[in-house]
Length: 270
Image (cartoon, rainbow, N blue to C red; front, side, top):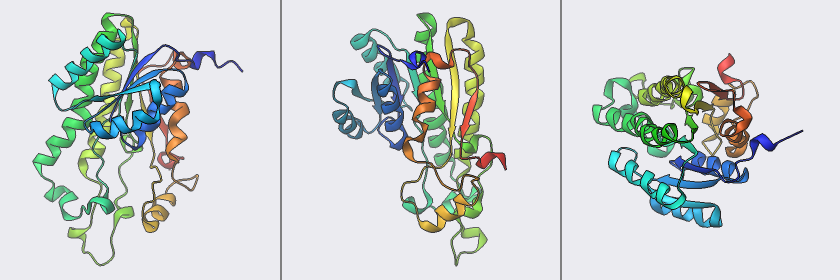
């Protein structure tokens, strides 16, 4: 089998939210295929610590995706250092964890604050738009490139709130997956299709990847409930999306644009 079309040698990529759990996996996937990766994150220390592991294959960038000037500055840094940007992965997002963050009543729609709504949309959706505007705009004006938006299985299905339930709480107190997450991930698909059509004649391909839940030592009760909804019967390992990222960011997917690839163990087919 010929894997030359997966080769990203010489390509320059940027991953937003690159210091996070999946951001690190996306970066490693690109590096494994030969790319140099800018790991952009609002938590510069996390990005820098991760890049130290990657030696000379990556460099950290402090990027606040809610700040247009920060995004512009990062593009300038990338172009000054490397002269080009070939791949943008819009990965930055807020994903509140019920157990870790103790989000209970405040997560419910009736109590969800406008402040949190605006903040989370600014990070996960507006940030992807502004990054695409600048990095994708440069690609379209020059030699083309690839944009990959990281969505979620919750871009195509609604969250099953039963998996978050806590014993001893009445319905009004039960924690839920906040409305923002599903809205943002669904909207990213609309942004994907729009950009794919808008820049189709400029050599910029835009696709989305919708991962399912990743196992990171969540409480056993939650894991069991979620796994019962997944035909394969388990959550994903963090590295199981790497090959999809390599496919979507390389010439292996040269005839694909505007699409959403769902990898969720079959959860969304039920």
